[in-house]
Image 1 (cartoon, rainbow, N blue to C red):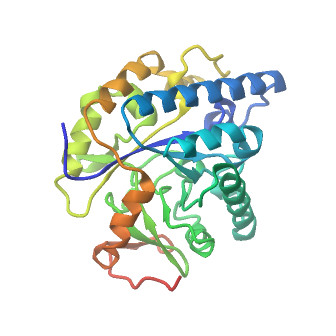
Image 2: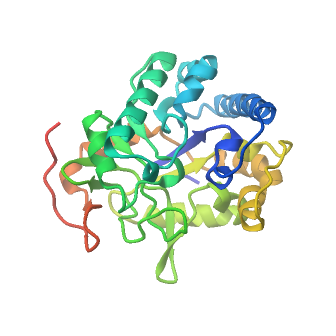
Length: 308
């Protein structure tokens, strides 16, 4: 099934013990080493699967991985995929000040550029953690010449989300600056946005739910479908983290069928990298809706692009 609306395939690359559900755990060093090795192996498996189908994707990579696994980042870039930033060490934006966040993104960007040999123009915050509580993050990204962000999830969730943000690409405004925002895919059902972009939703829901979201998005003007996954989601043999009941369900549900499900998805659609998607929408900048994260009563409104 093909649609005229672009679909972007993205992977958030971090070791399994870095996930938000495990942030409170003290993971033993020997297990961290094991997760790091499995992260590399599974990412290379993903690269092989994509290469077989001549599919290009975007990999949002934690900056520390550019130092610990530079050959992996180089392989991603040499395969024609985009390398983008997923922060330095996978801490949520809420833990930073504008100054420390700037240093985190800058350090990550520099390390990834050195390993990949190409400019880093995209960013995704860990756990989609750019919210109304952190509008200044938009200003920082713009100041660092990040071309696009993919951190605002337009859903209600206990860990992230801005439920009334646009579901299609939009101009995200912080306190003083704007940046192109490419939100993950949602499906409007029962008066709310259902998250169907990937992650646990991909593993929990039947594949037709994601496909239905893609079809619905294709009916909207100036739209795109942004999908996301993690390498650890395709590694059913990895040691399980000692999580609570809800977190364990969210983390491991459906993981044994995820590889087959991904291959089904790849056979049904055509995909573009996020940087190429961004170029399309930057050319239509004035036609995009604007949304101000700094004001709780913000609605879609016209805006003027801030000077670069």
